[in-house]
Length: 303
DNA sequence: CGTCCACGTCTAC
DNA sequence: TAGACCTGGACGG
Image 1 (cartoon, rainbow, N blue to C red):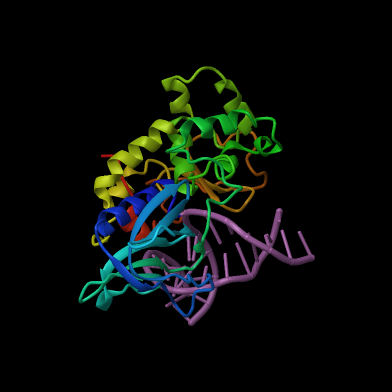
Image 2: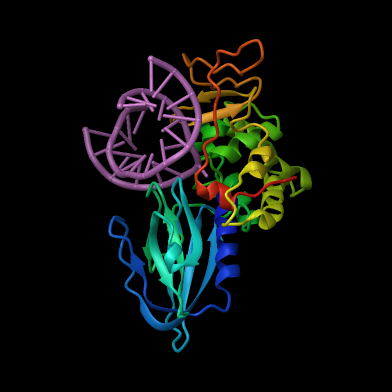
């Protein structure tokens, strides 16, 4: 997805573009979307956004009332927000908020593959853990106080996708985190994490990818540009995910895990590792990074 | 043309 | 632990 950082940047985008903008009328849903109708209509309201892990919440506030409405979004594989004129409505715009301007502009939730979802009058999904980026202490406590949970019997790379404990991590981040911390992906998660019960030091934060996340978010803010369809910066930020010379293997859930070196003891057995492409091994299929607009518009980078 | 792959959940057997 | 849910880009014949 859009992973935690992109969801956060999406919320910054909404607040930047819609700050001081007045919206009006009903919220419109595309015909094709199977998500619920948003029965909200108001002559004048404003929109603010918040993010938590892999969710974004829009709060609609009528100017002459205190009865706000929250809509909670998950982005699936391809969701993002855009703010355009009505004439330039993006393809796959599935939920639309219209401004009171003439000609009006439209805040759109765009989602090519329609794996994304929204919930009117929604709340943060109950079974998702604290946000790794903005609820760091409770995130950390949630992980460390539940290390006896059977979930941590799994390899670390698979547990990192468990949103009950790592709300915000997705497939590119797990690869980048484990690669940069030099942790073999298929080591039992509990083994990796149980050394962290000490006081909160910079090393601890580093070990749980916290520093990585903060870098992504802080440096990513300036990279967010929905008009610019250029993901060069994102690709050059990646050190492992989809990078030539790295190995990849399907994990036990069928997701591709990118890594370097030793896969670790719990690697799926019988699985042939994809060999890294080298000059001597040109027959290997070259992995290409195909990016939908959410990448090109939302993804941050570290120079 | 066709097959494979993609930033993620969901729910059904 | 599979599939189901979707569109579309890359690449092969």
